[in-house]
Image 1 (cartoon, rainbow, N blue to C red):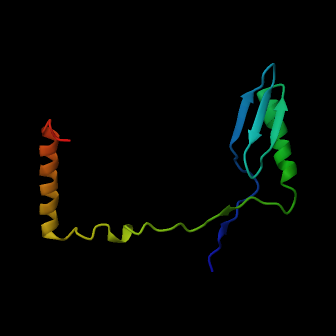
Image 2: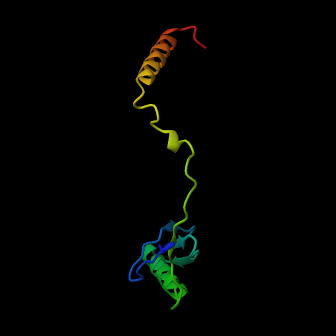
Image 3: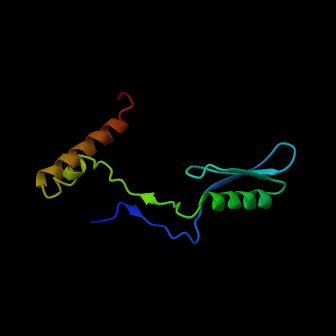
Amino acid sequence: MASTYCEIEMATMQIPVLVEPMPGNGFRARSGEPLALTAEGATRDEALEKLRALVQTRLVPGAEIVSLFVPGNQNPWVDMAGMFKDNPLFREVVEIMAEQRREADEDPDYL
């Protein structure tokens, strides 16, 4: 049976972090869910290092971050895509539609 999650090796991971200057002085580094943590420091690097320490503390032994694959709903129109590709009459219909579109585009009173 196929696994419904993808295990991630915990040696390294990348998480998006917002680093922003704080009014006055210093910087704030924030991560989003599932590790919604915030750290502040006098410098950008200090704020990031403090955030890194918080993340490592949060990921205690036994905790893990995994990606869960959930099947989406298939678009019902996909099964019909290309159903007229070998129909010689369909090419004629496409040409008629193209000609009507050209005529409509050239007509200043259209619409």
